[in-house]
Length: 240
Image (cartoon, rainbow, N blue to C red):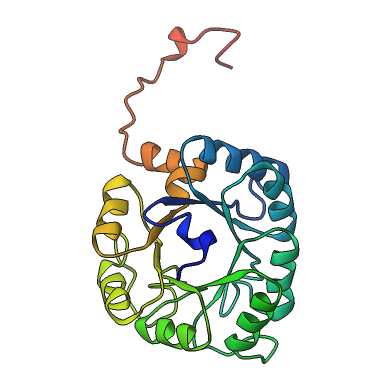
């Protein structure tokens, strides 16, 4: 039987509300406001990074909250150790997203140790995977659901131009737990394609919550059509 926290997102949209270090939106208050905005738009789940962001978001939304901690950007960096996972639970996460690859973890503990600790604390585990073998490994370790989050980022599969539907199809066919599509889902058509391929739910981040990247997609494709003014045509006060 599917846990009610997972059942709440079946067939629905989860929005990743994260900002990168150094960006203007990188603050718990801003991310909490973004989370409220996407829930107002119909998102049935929120995925957020960092215990401060999770603690700020939790009182403001009543949807499923998927939490994680990122440490660095290479190797195992998504909720890499048991202590990080437990911090996410304390901050209010219903589901803790962890690295679900077969790579060595920084604390030397197997993935099963993190899963067991999160379950003991009363939350569920989403394993972020990069391959079918990762997904099988994660389910054997006790993960409640798996995501295609790391497809193309671990060296086992190429980076696809959109969601890795081939991997998604493979994982859905092999596993009995919910499979959540995540990664390079850029528009509603991509999301629908994932659901049609058997995804339990879809997670969309950049395409909804990263205004810098969204703006770049416009500025990079729009030709420059301004006309340079001659010195005689410039306003003496505005155009210095």
